[in-house]
Amino acid sequence: MSLLALSDITIRYSRLTAVRNVSFSMEEGEILFITGPNGAGKSSLLRAIAGVTPVAGGRIDLAGHEITGQAPENIARLGLSMVPEGRDVFGSLTTEENLLVGTGMHARERGWRSRAADELEAVYATFPMLKERRHGQAGLLSGGQQQMLVIGRALMTNPRLVAIDEPSLGLAPNINDQVYERLIALRAQRQLTLLIVEQSSARAMMVGGRMILMRGGQIVLDGDARTLGNGEAIQAAYFGYEDH
Amino acid sequence: MLQILFDALSLGSLYALGALGIALIFGVMRLVNFAHGDVIAFCVFALLWPSTDAMAIVFAGQLPWYLLVPFVLLCGAGLSVLCEVVVFRRFRQANPATMMIASFALGFVIRYFLLMLFSSRPKSISLLPELSQPVEILGARLPLLQLITIVATMVILIGLTLFLRQTRFGLEMRAAAENFSMARMLGVRANRVIMGAFALSGALAAAIALIFGAQTGTLDIQMGASIMLMAFIATVIGGLGSLGGAVLAGFLLGAASVIMQVMLPIDARPFRDAFVYGAVILVLLFRPQGLIAARGTKERV
Image 1 (cartoon, rainbow over the protein chains, first blue to last red):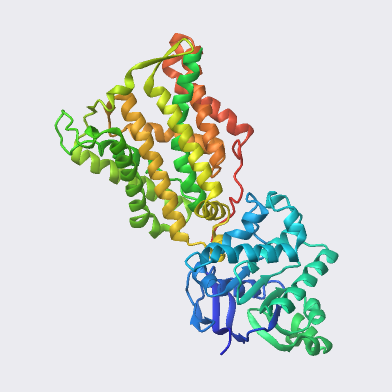
Image 2 (image 1 turned 90 degrees about the vertical axis):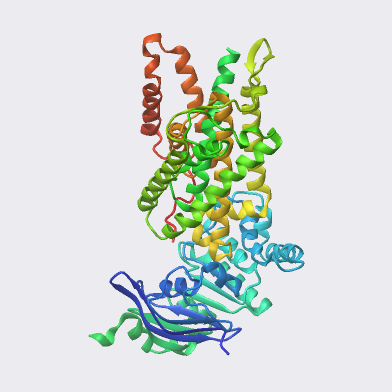
């Protein structure tokens, strides 16, 4: 059974249809990039999966449970960790408090405190810079550091699926490289299932894995990122040449 | 001189507690709760047995203080949570203006409910009379009540700070106040946090009710509204949603009121509030975002 399955998802903002009848599924351990130009509906799709944007039609399943119309906090409990666009660091909280916010959802389970402490150490081991600034205000971290923080924060709850919206947004290219280096290392280390939204397909081709290309609220291509990247099909699909 | 300082502190305490109650709810819900003043009035009348007679029939007011205080605090928290569950929960997705109007309506419902039970005549009550005895501190004679007001406010402020800084629920509340939808995506339960904020806010309203009732000795259905107005202004000056700002501005307003009462020429004193509001306008002209701008006044989803 798939870890995540979307069938026939439609998302509307009043009269504008952002996503039209999109279906795809994802297996455990997979890395999937959703790419496409601005306004293709990528972020809407991700927000719908997280439960913060309502869907107008269709059905979403996560880890064997239907999550269509569920509250974000319940979807998080089923194992989805979301890193939204613009990072959404809690700026007035300290770095460490940011990391700890999500751990409370396991508070009913035995031994959650020691597990949270272990997770914290693991995140600090991956991002030593966060440990240095653990008691500093998170709003004062640089953009790259904040991106590391929200990735760390997403890992704190030991999720089954990590969804990241535009990790490159607003970061210098070399910082962005560092973020991806860590992500790939983490994926190998923890067998993470990653769903990443990026505007450009270049990163997907570099990292490899599966890639879905969206345009105008629909999926236009779905396949292996490296083979798709070599063809002219991707350019045509991205820019929509076949329309002219 | 010391007298003025204590007057300013005790009046400021009332405003600060009121402003805090409003800022707590605004923080998590972007709701300016105009029913807050009527929750205060409700808590005061919870001391009496319902009757429309001019004579007050004291009910809970007779309890010894160690039962009286928890009883009134529970009344406030209970009513406030009830307002959330029955009314505000339906308006979660509505825009802030709609929620604000709903809170006005709710305030009127509470007020007319009290009017029905107690009539509009102000009632006098001697609440905890042992507190009106004067004490002497550094040569100034102060009513014991004033001292207790200031100490109680400090204890509440410190307690609330510790609660927000040190507990898991406090952490979740601070996260939710800054970015509600991100907090939910991290598994923070929206309903629990919002109900917690309402309970705290209601308990703060009850604390004001106790202090105010003991200070004035008269219970009036309108009394919540007057404190509420000042408290609301304090929240705005403090920077809507900023708890520290609300407290600071509450004390500043209290100080401004007391100082103007003393400094203004006798003829101008009846217009003291006009001068205070004038000062408020000046502050907002120079710092429209409030003294301490709140983080995360971002649109919530």
